[in-house]
Image 1 (tube, rainbow over the protein chains, first blue to last red):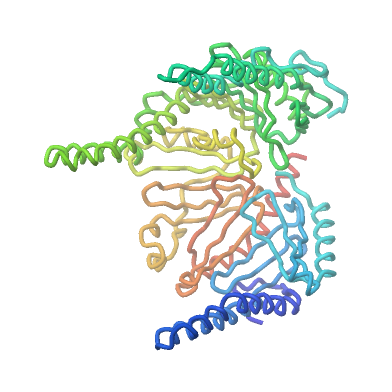
Image 2 (image 1 turned 30 degrees about the vertical axis):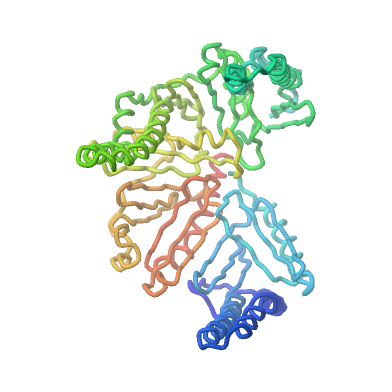
Length: 163
Length: 441
């Protein structure tokens, strides 16, 4: 697993379900099927000069690069439950780490889109009174998402702090 | 606080209506606009509209206003302010007074002429945009405000508003000068000079330029005038429960910012003010995160704790709101020199530091600003690093608060330092929260 700095001492990172990668691959495959392939075929069908071939090749290369980037981002997701706060890290190009104290949590959201449901996944999102708080964990197995939600709600209640 | 309704002179424990002239005021703007449209329609040449259609439209608008007034009722029940309103779509608003952040008394020009005022409640979290009483008589509004604040502090509602001690009064002249020394008006003057020069040398091009200059100039002048009007006669007074701010030329506004509710304070020193030793102090309190009209109105002129004042006055005010906060950066708090590659102009003023209670971040070359956030108010901490920053071994640390206007962002620190901060800050913030809880009990 790639580990995004900064190193936080005494933290064991948990990661989204492996099925998240399958879900992402499916999403990318669908996008390829709908956009990249038709455009490439249309380019090659209409003309055979080198420019068209180059454009088609570039498009395919872009799709492959996207695939690699998506894999990197999938690997970068991580979260950790400490005694008093939740840590979430993500991102490859722009790396981010969020630390949200349980006591600051206003509510927890669990959502699942159609592709997520297909793979039995869910996204957990924490909301605090600050709009800038960015605490989202995608691609958790549904059981894990529910466990996390219940645990966060319980911890939030015992540690609640006023504004 | 007891749940029994508190019987008082100012706050009704039974349902009561707003002032009888309220519908007139609330629909005044709409009626005036409608009147203009309909009037011009009547006077337009070649149009022979019968007048009764227009009269019906006017009558409907007026009746709607009156009905809205008839169905709007409010009362205090236990520790809640309850407002019922709406004829077609009934709406019921409950404001828990414990969550009250501030109470504003706003008096628009027309209301002032009639001796009326509007009371606005500023609530945090799941508050409501409709927590306002428009309109009450001025004396009543003052009483209501005092009682609401007393209840919010868990006192008896009849507790008279504690006497306030005047701290600072900003002379209107200074507000005018300060506002003219901002980029907007200066730009207008430059544009006018340029246009005049072009007009002299080449009249055709000049004439073309003139129109756009005039339009932009007018817009900027109006904005400046509005700002000046809002900050006219600005006074700050100190009361046991918070700071009382009053201001306004045409529309006056009185608000109380309770102590301990500041999410962040920003200290702003625009370039042109620095020789005069003037600063502006702004405050961020917790508000809800959606858009509504009244919020936007107040957002046009940022909530200033001191629109313009001397450093010493500003320091004294800062000490009242955030005791022991410092705006003088300690040595060695500047972002590393290599930050120039990422932010060439900014690096000089990019400083950030924290102590046991506050995190402070300085930024801005022309408009230097320092955001001070009490660590006990921090909602979440974030660490970010973009691709360029990673090459340069830099990273940023953000402290998010429930305020909306200015989060504390320590940009482009040395990556090692930023990592140390993000490891240390959660514990310091937790200690600050705990200290605050034991203080308030």
